[in-house]
Length: 181
Image 1 (cartoon, helix red, strand yellow):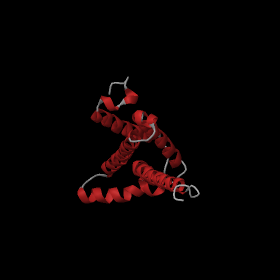
Image 2: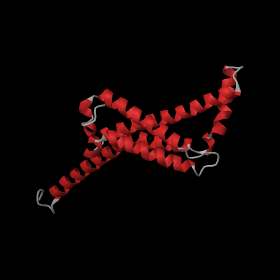
Image 3: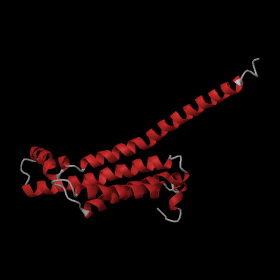
Image 4: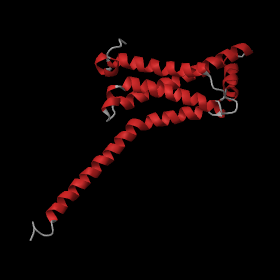
């Protein structure tokens, strides 16, 4: 009765297979969240930084008093220059981090094309996000879209990707075999 009872052994085997499949799917989801989660969160953070709360007018409320505290005799022109450099440096840095997180996500991807082309995919993501971000800023009060900012963003992401490609070595840069980095 045991092995021929309404296909019971087959049911047990399929139950074990579906439990294993569920375990693999759960692990796969966790791996994807671990791989892409930081990238998506960083992109969201960049989008938040593109709101009115981080406009030059609002950031000057923090930078100006800090600079005056540090350097009581600093001129208004010098404060403006330092504030501008801080803001442009922030553009460069936030997109450098985006490039690093994109590379991390793509070189560990389960998709062969993304894994082989992590450099190009990372750069395309940086470019796309920089363009969308500047377009978004054109609709935000006290913000404006700037091609210069977009170029700084892309240069930040590209710099991080190039440094990472050099650090990882030429064997890891499959998508750029013809380009000497």
